[in-house]
Length: 155
Image 1 (cartoon, one colour):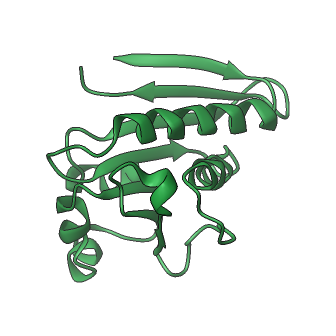
Image 2: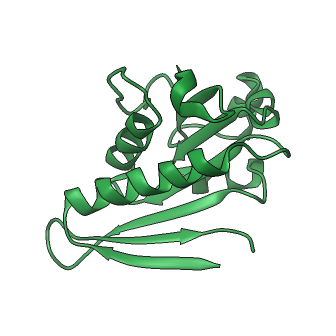
């Protein structure tokens, strides 16, 4: 199933990120492993901005920046916001492959249903991700601040 939306401003992108975070909070963790959100899009499409707002909605107070050089940043989630989730992990997969994932014990993060994992450039490690991954594709619209947003998930 896919949901497509034209977002006309950064404010609309942030509103969508908040709404999706609230949906995940409401639903709570899966019983089959981590909740994984794969973010795909060109440079500057809004993946990091989306993630910042998503994590803020989950109660993360720490300044969120792209984990480009550290690969992954982890955040404890406050009890009042988490509804069963314990931690959020923000991954930048631009420079990694399956071997690097294995070295960082990524399978353990995927196995823990109390984790929510947001992965920028997730298409680069698609084979290592669960079939239940929620895919968010972001692209540039016709105008400078427009973004084309597509959410895809398994029915």
